[in-house]
Amino acid sequence: MALGNHMIMLLLCLLLLLLNAHSKCPKSYACRNFSLEFPFTISSDPDCGIFIVDGCDSQIGHPTLRTADPTSSFQILQKPSTNAFLIHDGVLQQLLGLPTCYTVGNMSLPQSPFVSFTFYPKLTFFACYNQTPDHRISDYFQSYRVLRCNISTVYYIFPETRQAPAIPSGCLVTQLPIKSDSSPFLTANFTLEWKVSQYCSECYKGGGQCLTDNQRQFYCRKTGNTRVTKIALIGGMAIAALTSSLVTAFVFIWRKRAKAKQEREKEIELYLEENVNLAPMRCKYSKIKKMTNSFSEHLGRGGFGCVYKGKFPNGHPVAVKVLNESNEYGEDFMNEVASISRTSHINIVGLLGFCFDGSKRALIYDFMPNGSLEKFIGNNVSASQKSRLGWDKLFEIALGIARGLDYLHQGCSTRILHLDIKPQNILLDKDMNPRISDFGLSKLCPNRSSIVSRMVARGTIGYMAPEVFSRNFGEVSYKSDVYSYGMLVLEMAGGRRTIELRDEDHTSEIHFPHNLYKQLELNAERDGDLYRTINAGRDGDLYGTMNEEEESQHMERNLIIVGLWCIQTNPKDRPSMTRVVEMLEGKFGTLEAPPMPNL
Image 1: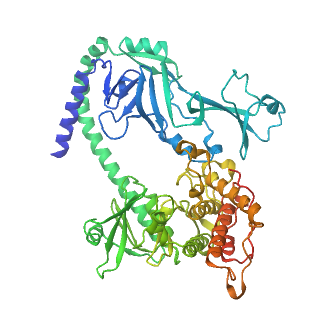
Image 2 (image 1 turned 90 degrees about the vertical axis):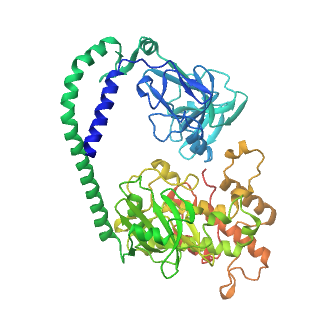
């Protein structure tokens, strides 16, 4: 009976589409405080334009321009003229928080054979590969400003006073938005202009739709009365034929999807049997609800789901992470269960149980009463929270994290790469001891190999190693975890707080590890050889007979030097986590400052 009702509704919808096939598109659509005209449309009328704008009916956030690139984020702030938008590029905003060398790249503008886009104000950059033997490059860019990067040298001039001739061999040109014609500072807000081709504009004004054929040649599909006549002639026969065929197709698709879902669940079951060592307790979803009192106490939200506080029947407190149902293939769930079930270490969060009940998936961990490390470091931490982490405890936490990562890389039968080390994923137990958590992006390396296969760049900007962005920097390996650890340690040492916040708009130009390195140089000039930590004292006393203030200074300097070693651009120049542990434990006696990271 339910299937029959579905088919009746489907046929009614088809009839409505046939009856309204001749209707013309409206001239414009209301979208917040401005109107949308061709080539833009809304999602309910996709055939009335070339680009779709989402969120016109919502009062939350800004309308978003949908492009062919699913990672782009073009928010429409205003419409200053009939053929221009004021745009905020969310992806570019994230890149502006990285070192300038990572920022200089091509912008991803909307693409269409019928519409050309441009943006302004903008600044032109020439990126020339360092290995290019063309000596004319340095001569050509004599009056330009220079930005030296790892694999290329970037040239630009402001203001741009002359038209650039042919680009020198071995150089690429790119343009990025700036705040104004009088300001060279990069920004994520810019004016986006468009121009519709003459052929497409005439086609649309005549009631047609701009399309391309198999050879990418333009043609205009008319939607006038001739089309209505053809529809009326074949509509009756089509509906009669579709009545039976749609029922058959609906049943076939439904059974196929149900079978595919069952097969996928069997695959996950088999994966769990083969990869989960000493499998923890498995629970039904109903038990998870009871354990969390119907998810009444919310602890936080991550990239893969929400975390709730619960307790076992014996009163033991636990944290329950309920995974999103959007990831139907379950990679994050399998990663987490398979990775953590292979571990047993004091600095890695313990997996007590899991739930795999159809589409319902959850993970049960030991409850960490002090939450994540994020609450105790950074600029927005309260004075009471800072007081709980003196330099001795901060140093112990950094050492504990290093030991946990060294165990993942060297202590397990299968090497595990975490690939998402950041303050939010470091939990603190009741004694403020660190536990590495959230293995949703982790990779298992069979046969203890060092390199993982090509992967999608996922993680957290600011902690991701350069090779995760681009293989030009090297292969993704356990050294990628070392880089993330280095950025975390520098943040723990207070690196971000050493920047003078002169102007929020200028802070993207200052990379805080670079600032820390300069600070070490200044201290060395002022106080002598401060690149080195003091030699280990006798009887295992790492800091000898120093007073408390001197001891704190040396702890801070140790963390900064270790962090700078870990974030070297070339993965081969970074130490292993085993060596990091030895450096922190003082087994090398003194620590030499690393070369300036090529940021």
